[in-house]
Length: 413
Image (cartoon, rainbow, N blue to C red; front, side):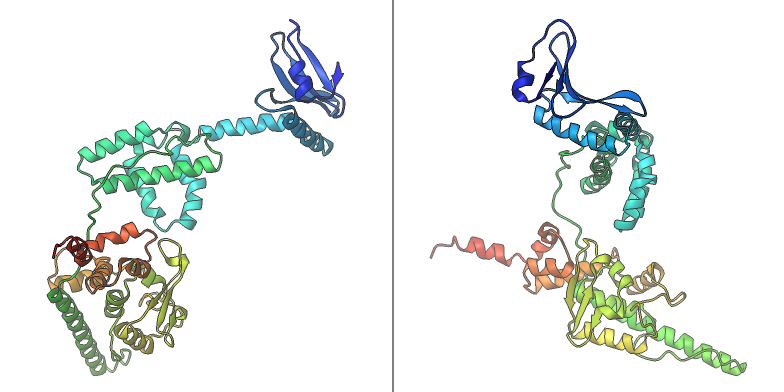
């Protein structure tokens, strides 16, 4: 039977108790197959290397006659180019089946790992988290990881006294991996989508220096520098006594990178990694602006930081001392990018007798000083490079005046 296949003609086809076909009069090979019970299936029949084959399009109702016709035209074009469309369909299904069974560890060590290592600054630590905290899921197919798996782990982690915010961050790593697997077609469904995070108190850790602590820190930095100068002077004298002329005097305001780094963070709020990646081309002494390139920031967005008097004088003095034409704070050993200042920072903090204070807390100190000086939170957000104002709200309690002013409006004269 031959008819132009459209909505009207296909809807009119009925069950006869026998299987039959109706061939389209316009596209060769396009037909609808009707089962004995009346089920209608769109099919494209063709020949490849002398062998007749069929490409099953879909069931009537899932697609319309016009949609099936469009697909048939596309397949006809591929066949004209020598493609065996049915074999390709079988191959695609097989690949999808393999992808569906891809395990978490295979995805993390393979395709996702390659992508993440090039784009996510924290991927190295995140990968360690996955392998340590979710080792029971490593050999589980990605498509089988469920919300129950995540909720069960979250419950156990909470019982182990892990902070809710920490639990949420670690679950978010798995959610990100599964989301990308779904986006890339590795799994058919992202079952973790919509999974709610544990409710947390928005009270975040804000450790900043008191006035006396800041004075102690600055004093310790000065003492450290004087000690380094004295050691160098003694070494020069030792070399001269032995007719060795290989040591030079420490000239300039700073003896090494630590003091200018600390003072710069106190006055700009830069992250440690941003300091390590800072180049002299990012520093404009004419406009007194430091540009933090998006490639080096946590949120991937470029921001511009104005230099106050101290930040400007620190960078200018360091520029006059530095031999580097590229990195502002290169490694004194390799000349390449610094990656660790734990030893020097730990020494000066110990000397200053300041407890429970990390290098990153200098950034909190910068923000806290701004808020307590009356700077609005959105400006602080922009200077810190926060994507979300909610992150900056951790400092709101340091400026209670606006809340006090609000409730004062209720005062009755």
